[in-house]
Length: 114
Length: 114
Figure 1: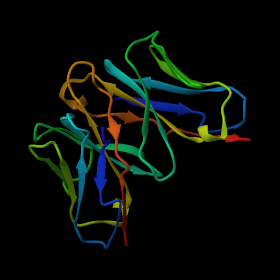
Figure 2: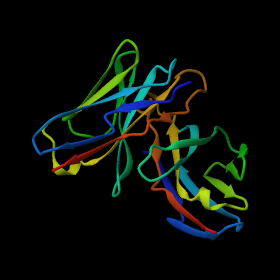
Figure 3: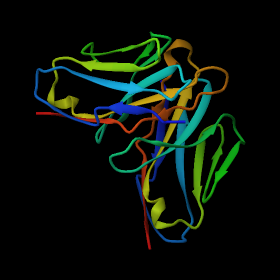
């Protein structure tokens, strides 16, 4: 069964203090690893999709990287508006049991203080 | 393009009642997945529909069911509601095909069971 573990559970940063969030996964044939941002009371907002080890994606202050066992979401010089829960999910390649199914981690709650 | 829409946004029901939630996917997206999000369990996969057929199902009791219409709109139904069914119900759509695995989420329906 696919599993995703995110760390840390919560992270408090000062504005401008760069850091990284970790997502460790086990999956049978990775079809994709996804990062989402979720604000309280809202649906997850898509950030990145990574397909294979070595791949990197970047968007504004965020950069996602992927290895065979984990993914990192690097946040450079964060601002208070980056405060949110960041979710990591995988889709395995296990045939019919993987159709449309994302397995999520518990998320990292990021708080950026001004 | 308009995003994924869900109705209603909020719902209050009592134990034993049933409820139907609706999801309209992004135009052109043929796959719709449903998830339940609770503080304790996080985001859990309910089921996935493609071309009006359920292709995958998570580990939820038979009280949870769904369907998809020819225009790709989807509904999920929960019968004989229990207190533990209180959650944010999210639907997500994707194109489905090739490497287009990314799922885009709607705002969710917040269900409270009293």
